[in-house]
Length: 124
Image (cartoon, rainbow, N blue to C red; front, side, top):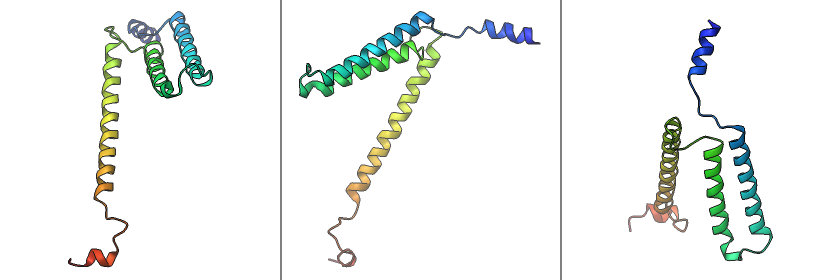
């Protein structure tokens, strides 16, 4: 029974990275973190461009971590994980956008704080 389980487990090849890919991803993550820290602390990046630089470095760091640690990509064995990730991001974006829309509309349509209850109840 355990032999059957082992053979079926081995036949299902998971898309796991090698030690080299994990070390590469870790190294890139450290370099990107150091660049972000350096952009803020060194003064080499102009003050008005720091936010843009940090945003770009954060996006690159996200992509590095998705590729090297979560194994998302275009390869056939990785496609299911990538599709699930993209659909999850779309669902989260829809929920966040819908919540912001509802909160904005509630704020716009709420009674003014300058309006007294007596004035609201009057017919003028």
